[in-house]
Length: 196
Image (tube, rainbow, N blue to C red; front, side, top):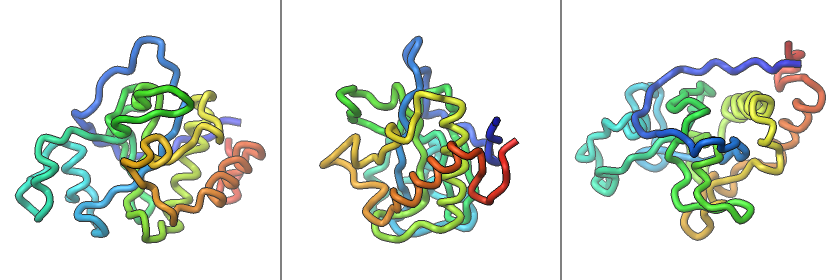
């Protein structure tokens, strides 16, 4: 069965480039982000996180933003607190989300991974809407890129230990991976509807 792509609002980040020639997409990395930390938005298009990924962040807008001056980062997608998904970088392109990183002995995870940000922090629970959107998006990506298996879904903290801590201890890996495996196995999405 073919799993449908979730609804994605398209945004075009300049912070991306081509993957190395012939590189297989084989890893999914889960992150979190909020700017300022712990502040969430109801209007993603007007948020500081959106501005950061679009390269338009006013680094004088908030205390602490000065450290972000000149920073060029992006993720393929972000899932906001209400479950909406924005795509900033085409999946075939290399987003700049992982930084110095290593997975299964390979460095430069940006080369072969897709990065998904959750609007959040390490210590505040994620929303039900975020889990549902993440599960749906993950299932779609696993189907589109068969080298991404549940064993190759990881957190930023796992590929950059000591440097990064996201998605944090509040992220429910057991619930998330069980739902993904169940959906991929049965062809039934998280809402109980059969994938077409």
